[in-house]
Image 1 (cartoon, one colour):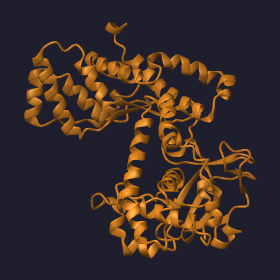
Image 2 (cartoon, one colour):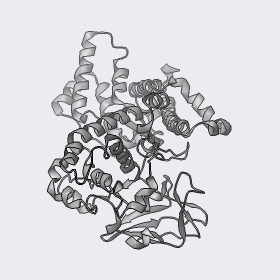
Image 3 (cartoon, rainbow, N blue to C red):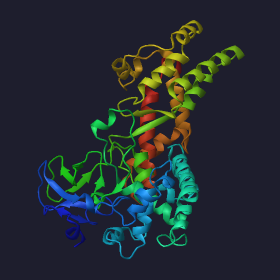
Image 4 (tube, rainbow, N blue to C red):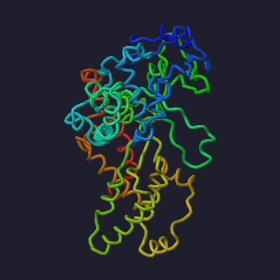
Length: 434
C-alpha cells in the first residue's frame, strides 16, 4: 500500500521475502528475468534524506552551517531521528521494518572483548573504535546542541546517543550515495554526494557476482537486471567492490570464503618499516633508514597500508616507491633526493606487483615484502599457525554450521585475508629463506 501511495512501481516478476534469501529480507524472482529489465522504479520524492524530510527547511537552510561534521551525515541522521520517532511520518511503514535495529549485527554492537577475540589483525577493531569515538564526539559537539535548541522537534531524552548510534549503523548498512557525474570532476575536487535512504533498494542483499544494479535518473531511481535471472533465484545488488572486512564492518555480514572476488588483505606500512629495521647493526645505517623513511612518508602522505587482492597489489605504485627507496645504495639515494623522484611506468609496475610478477622481483625487495607479510600474519589472534586451523574449520561443514553468525563472519574475514597473505609469503620466499 505504501509503495502504491508514493508511486514506487514494482515489477510483477519479483517479490520481497524473508524465506529463501541469504539473510533477512531479500528479493526473489517469481519468473525468469532478462538482462535490461527494470525490477522497480522509485520516484525521488519517496527517497528519505534531509531534502525530503518535513524538517528540511531547518536542516538545509536555517542552520545548515552548524551541522557540518567530518562524516557529513548529520543532516540525514537528524532527519532519521525525527521521522523514526514521529507517529505521523510518511515513511513510517518503511521505517517500521527496522523496529529495533537488532538485525543490524555490525561489529560496533559487539562487545570490545568479542571484537578483539574474533577480529584481531583484521583491521576491524581499530576501525570500530574510531567510529564509536567519532559518533560520540559528533553527537556531543554537533547534534546535542542542535536538538536542544529545537525542543519542539527533537527531545534529548528520546533522541539519545544510543538511538543516534543505531541510526549511524542504519545509514552505514542501508543507505546509498549517488555517483558523481562525469562533469563534476572538471573543476577539481567537489563534495561527495551525501547518503540517502532508498526504500526497496535496501531490501536487496549484496553479492560481488551481482545480478542487478541501481541506476540514477533525474526523476527516479531504477533497479535494473544486469544478467539473466532464473525463476526462484534471489536477486542480488552490489554495494560496490567490497572486501569481506568492509562488508562486516559496514553491513554486518560477509560472503562465505572463497566467493568474494573483491577480498583484500592489508599490510600496514609500519610492518614494512619493522621489516626494514631487521638486521641493522650500526647507528649510521639506522640514521640512513630514518632519513629515507621520513622522505617516503612525506611523499606518500603517510597512507596507512599496502593493499593486496587475489591478483596482486592494488597500491603497487606506493609499494614500488617504498621498496626502491629503502633498497637504494647511499649514492642512489643522494641522487634521488637531488632529482626529487623519478618517472614511473605504471603498466610495468602493475605487472611486476601482480601475483605472477612477484617471484621475479629483486631478492632484497622480496625479502622486505615477505617479512612485512609475516609481521602482519603474526598480528592475528593465532599468528601464522592460524591459516591451517581456519582452513580446516572452513572446510568442515558440520563444525562451520555449529558456529554463531558472528564467529562465521569473523572466520570468513580472517581466512580470506590470511589466504592472500599466505600466498604472498610463498611467492616472495627467496632461496635464502628456505
